[in-house]
Image 1 (cartoon, rainbow, N blue to C red):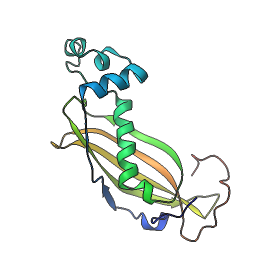
Image 2 (image 1 turned 60 degrees about the vertical axis):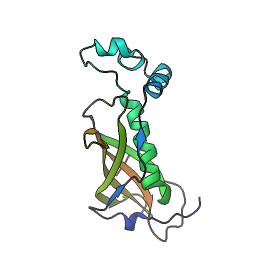
Image 3 (image 1 turned 45 degrees about the horizontal axis):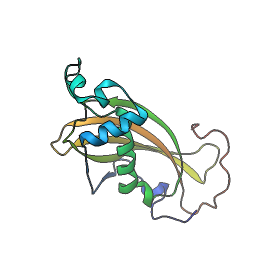
Image 4 (image 1 turned 120 degrees about the vertical axis):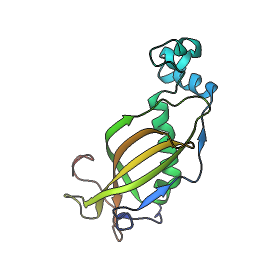
Amino acid sequence: MAQKELYWEDLTQGRTWTAKQSVPITTEQIIAFAAEYDPLDIHIDPDLARSSPIGVHCASGVQTFGISQRLMCDALLLQTNVVAGGKIDSFRMVAPVVPGDILKLSAQVVRSLIHAGNHERGWVVFKVDVTTTGGETVLVYEVTVLILRRGAQGGSLPGNVGQQ
């Protein structure tokens, strides 16, 4: 694995990254994704969606999460010595994502700790906020990521990835 710019020590509590790009959402994208992965009426049929209890044609939460992962990679993870993902907590879909929305992301370090079984690695917990360019929050979650410490030699990960 090629060494990247950021290590566990660089990801200090309170440090925040904002994705430089944003992602526009279209009706066609929503329908195409939903047809393949989440074929509920509110995602694949705009007319039925408008007459549903939610009242709008909206993107799947899975699609929104996938978009957020891409934005997080571009903003931070592709420059970081990531070993593996650990877990996702407090996943909340706050508002529907509708055609015409433009999504952006910010991620803030909440806490970090050294891996109990391998001190060459550490866990970092990020609070991720996905909002529209109009300022409406649509998705919030915390993601725990295992990251190499500076000077680590690599090697195999002992135990389960999700253990702290």
